[in-house]
Amino acid sequence: MTVVVKIGGARAVNPEGALADIAELDEDCVVVHGGSTAVDDTLDAMGTEPEYVETPSGVVGRFTDEETMDVFKMALPGLVNTDLVTGLQNAGVDAVGLSGVDGGLLTGKRKSAVRVVEDGKKKIRRGDHSGTIQDVNADLLDTLLASGYTPVASPPMLAEGTAVNTDADRAAAAVAGALGATLVVLTDVEGVYADPDDPSTRIESVETPAEYDALTDAAEGFMTRKVMAATEALESGAREVVVASANAERPIVTALDAGGTHIHPEALE
Image 1 (cartoon, rainbow, N blue to C red):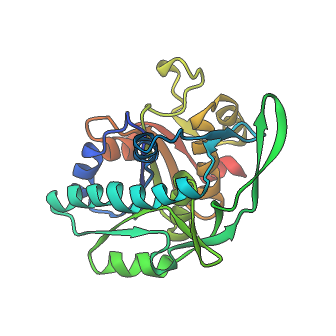
Image 2: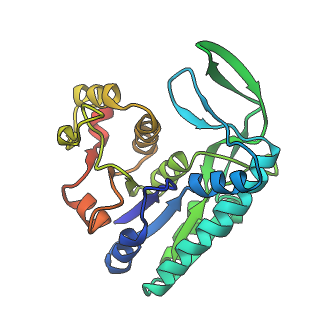
Image 3: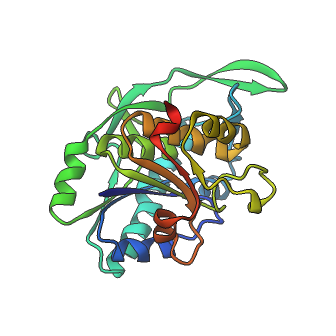
């Protein structure tokens, strides 16, 4: 079994436990990561305010202009990726860092604009520094895995010959689907909660369409994007998706056992 591990880029996510787990797992692993905190910190140091927008479906994401894109390229495949690869190497894992541009790992369509909601009104924001993943170079990942390496991948992606931003959760979903893998999405909470403010209401398993409807109803804020990514992963061939805490003592092992929220393909039927 192949496991794709998405490590979030939020400040509250500590990757150390996940890196230690990867070193001990018998399964092949592919790591996909974000880096929102690193991007925001760099922009802040430059005196630039990060800009986030909300889509009509309620998903909050970064608006990427030319300056932000340059920072994005420095922070994710540079700083964050290098730190994760270094941590894995120190744990005895032969890790290889990649961006979605390397070997055409993540390719797709460039967006010319995004639909947003501002002051309660739907608007079109022009901007061509983001894209939608349509293809994953699974052969590249399979080659690395077969040679004993652990790929560590991040956005940007390649669209029309240009490096552009793409959501890391959805990138992990695309990779998991292409590999027919189990996707473990590690974040700063223990799963999806029926009551977003009450951790005791964690949804443990989603196996039916009715349970899936309840899951989507419960997802709010940043969790909306993770449930959307889980759906895309399962629709494209992933075996299972688990949304779980990166800060558990054994985060990946716990997630693969009974921790987090387990979403199964039959829930989408």
